[in-house]
Amino acid sequence: MAGWGWARTVRGLLLDVSGVLYDGGADGGVPIAGSAEALRRIKASGLKLHLCTNETQETRENFVGKLRALGFDVSVAEVTAPAPAACRLLKERGLRPHLLVHNDLVPEFADVDKTNPNCVVLGDAAENFTYANLNEAFRLLIGMEKPVLISLGKGRYYKETDGLKLDVGAYMKALEYACDVQAEVVGKPSKMFFEAALAELGVPPEQAVMIGDDIENDVGGAQQCGMRALQVRTGKYRPSDENHPKVKPDAYVNNLAEAVDIILQQQRG
Amino acid sequence: MAGWGWARTVRGLLLDVSGVLYDGGADGGVPIAGSAEALRRIKASGLKLHLCTNETQETRENFVGKLRALGFDVSVAEVTAPAPAACRLLKERGLRPHLLVHNDLVPEFADVDKTNPNCVVLGDAAENFTYANLNEAFRLLIGMEKPVLISLGKGRYYKETDGLKLDVGAYMKALEYACDVQAEVVGKPSKMFFEAALAELGVPPEQAVMIGDDIENDVGGAQQCGMRALQVRTGKYRPSDENHPKVKPDAYVNNLAEAVDIILQQQRG
Image (cartoon, rainbow over all chains, first blue to last red; front, side):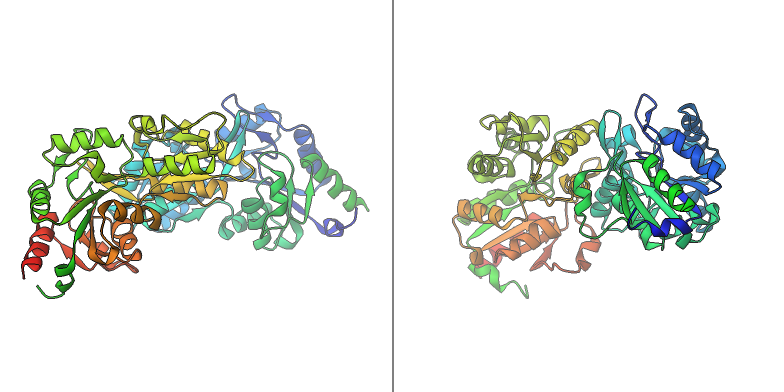
């Protein structure tokens, strides 16, 4: 395969989850064909593996439980997600959040002081993105002398089994505009977040490859950190992504299984 | 009054409504003290008067009915509002809208073909800004080869009797970001919209003054059209508006009544 020479020196893979391993949905989601087997092959090959997700609709424990039920051999220790990273940041800075997040994510913030909020934390709240809840978050922010908005990711949209859904980034932009404030993003494509995931992976960026379906948050973000990055043609991938004005993946693959085929082939070569 | 010399040559007033005449709310709203009397004094003085609103929560007929019930002597012909302007634009361009607007605004679009939509029209939908409705508008847009998003105004927020509310501009930004599209704004601060209101007023911009509570959409927009513009310290006005990085009103007034006092005084002087 021309252009894949770099894959010979790869020692670890960072994988996005939604749109790469499975497509989420109210029904629990469905695995993407070949992905569970691809995960097993990576592990069997001796390559390191870590999941790097912007998933904020549930705790990591529940998320991993769901993935296991779908046939994926993963553990909580193998997942880097925004909510635990946000909790560390909140504690370091003495921030007390008002949460506009999915109900099932709230337990991740159990140890954080939420009285008399001095910031707003925004996640993919899904059905909790009501008119009333958005007004509440807005009023808190506009009432602060210096509004602090922390967004768990900044994705535009994602794909579920019943179609595309607006992601947290769209609501982040709404609040940014209304309050004339710039959100701090915890999650992909934040450099700090990728670096935390790389530390968990235990591989330097030049020997790691990110595989995701999001041209900006997965591919662009990882490349900014010095990693190689592949875009899969599954999940939210759209043909127009291949004309992105700024981001060009190191390669496109039809799906995770194909990426793993090629990387393992290069490793043997 | 120093700095008010220009008011001697004023021949017509354009007034914003919400935050200038009254504060809206689920209860029908409450008049701002002195505003109904100020409106009568303008009319008695022989100065021309026209209302220029971004109100899109109801038809002009209902809106005017509500204002009359609150004691304001106004008629439908004295009001320029975004929905009728949007209808003209839709027909001119052969656009068939999907409406994400307040239920009470829908009758304004009765004569517009809404089958097989090829654009989205966004108004201040209030309680209709649900997660499901936003996803629906998003999916329609992202599915278009060249998405067309028409926004009835681009306000950040407004004040109702029970507090500040996110305005249509926040939701416009959410959809703009998710679909990587720029909305076309019908309403203030669009130059075309102010020009239509000035034509109704029947006064050239240099002899007209806009009075509003929105530093960007009322004051900035009117000044861009060559009008004078005053900001009232009622409605959504906040002291921080006086440090706006780009827009400086020709004067601040405590309320509409004070503006009318000073203008009429200058006219006599």
